[in-house]
Image (cartoon, rainbow, N blue to C red; front, side):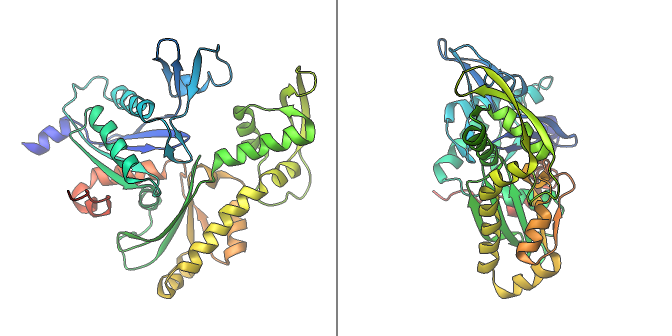
Length: 343
């Protein structure tokens, strides 16, 4: 009987990311992938829009409507809004089904505190889940990227999200060593904004900075220069102005946060027990998360560590797929979930 009810309730997995939230539904796969943004009317305290619709409002709203990203640096900065956002996304997926309380697996960054974990769980229960399980992001990313996490063999995953970079070495279904660094895609966007402001006295919005990064961002110095036109507001006149910017410049701008990511990968390797380090030289490391899409990052990490580096097949979906696998094969994979605190 229980399993039949479980099927009706369609168990779900959620990748609650700084930049995007993805929802995976059992037997259906990823059914939702939207920005982790909420637009709030400060006069009434009501939510105006969530997700894609809210992201389009960033930088374009009247004063009393603010766009909030409830997660920054992989940490929940606004609990109440995060809860409402999660509830909204789950309800959106569950449109037709009368909620028969599903099981819910939520992937969170590994550096999340106990308080935040409880908050995420609470949000899941508020959204109508029967049981909420927490899973660490690097573990979910590794499973989603197809690494042999259950074998007595070291695998390494470097998951570069919007707010955090998680570096983890995994063996026998557990995380052996991990580092959570509050540097991710957002930090790269910020570096671009700072550079353009300083060198061209032009103010860029975060969305434009992200477009620039995607279009011409590179992890190592480009051979020949390519130009890209950006539009922003002139700091001096306050009027809109466009300027041509080169990929070499952008590389210089994002180099510092990139180096921090490379350093944390090296530091994790240094802490690794020798047996596992041997496995890693053979198996290499897998890049997941949006940051894995930055051109040349795999090459740069390979040069820095002397190890083979490969990018996961669909780096943006790795965490959601990994958490989703736990929902599909709950009994086999339940060991990788974060254990319930004992009271």
